[in-house]
Length: 282
Image (cartoon, rainbow, N blue to C red; front, side, top):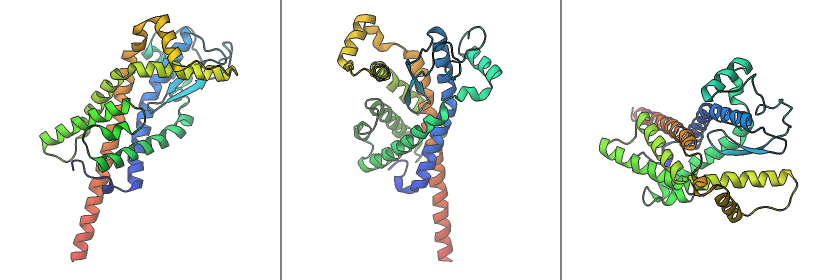
């Protein structure tokens, strides 16, 4: 089977591979989301009880604003004198005034949830993929974030199979893995955008309802109807460019680094087995 089997590496090596990919993804993607939140709070101040989504490149986290507009004690409320003029300007000003660490504000606590979840996700995917094989996209549909994972993994594995067949190799290069991850992630992000828009509105609605202590929860169907009447059909496709720009690189970084370390451990294990075999023959 192309790419080897799950048993080619140990469980610890599997965890290290997925952990490394998860941390690299978070370190590279989080600054963009921190800047996005700061830009949004500049336009629409985050008042006490207001909910917003924080993404570290691995998963979305629903956060609640704990302070009013006059208190800038929390990272998502801090504003430099004047206004940010855009993403690049915000990054420069935040780094210059608050220090580079501010670009990763809020990351450590979210990693406590995101990294273990990512390790389990990739370990389960490898196991079921090798159990069922590469055909009809069955395995991805059993995993989280359906239908995003279904489109993503089906696209990635399809492109991977074509590349391995054409190159007559048992593994892709890091550039090939990065490209396949970015392309399949971008396509999946576009196809599932309406689901993401609805999910985002639903999470924020639930969060703010709980903060207010209300027991009345708007149903998902009612939320869709309200969104349609208020903003029209195009509302379901809002934020297309930012979503693709965020998701495609995150998928590319995660899968390419994961595949790289997985292949590294496989090669290392084969060399060790070969060395032991030669030593026993002597």
